[in-house]
Length: 300
Image 1 (spheres, rainbow, N blue to C red):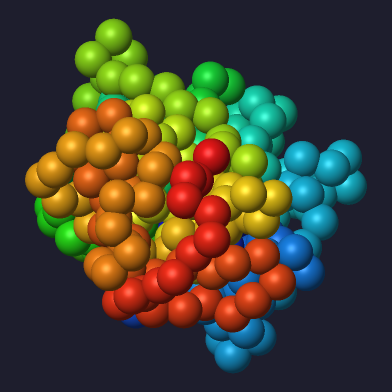
Image 2 (image 1 turned 180 degrees about the vertical axis):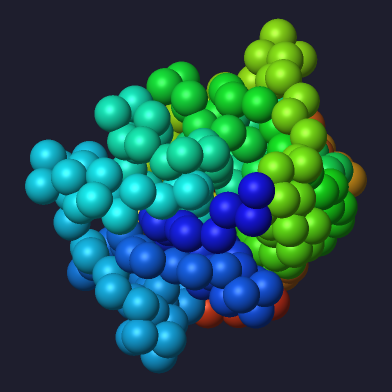
């Protein structure tokens, strides 16, 4: 078959690195759809737009689903469409255009953690592994046949950012294996068993509020799942918001939310104590914590 003409929808490091791999393998990328960077988001990842400029590949930041873009895609008549961390759901009218299918690279070991922000959810839920999966796109999100997938380990000390870097590397591994087979028409298709998986929605900054009645380990997982470069887990001390950027669960007992020690700073939880190692009081800079003196004695 040797199908080689691509349209790619991409953003973030996974988009950047997967495009690099396809270019390394000689793929013909006719057009890239990407996003404008949000002024409300910390941009810590590589720019797909800069990569496209460097390689002379035309790109658009408008939605691929807009009628004029659907017509552009039809005119190009691609063999495949790839989606790599593109933030818009691609509609069926677009998915039916490529001759040999449209595929998405998802940041989990599907069918587990279908849906939004899968890396953050996996860390928050205390998982010990996740992965990267290349699958065909259908109308239902993350539900089409699987082409290839790669597992990655989640260490107990990993933050979501650490895991994201592992997933990005796994995504490149998957693309490096799968693209030659897709191009030749010999790639496998494994039906997605949705009953064996799970679906999670997106997260808002407000979802990072700490519930001190939960076990220390669960609170720790939340903190490392939304720490830098994400908005952070937070609580209140009196009327001041406090973001907790780094912590560690330790043995002990204490009233949930109550300061059990100020040196080190230990907070009671529903099961165990949480040692606070880095925090940021509302309106102040982030501070590494070794010993503090606080008038208020309970976090809420």
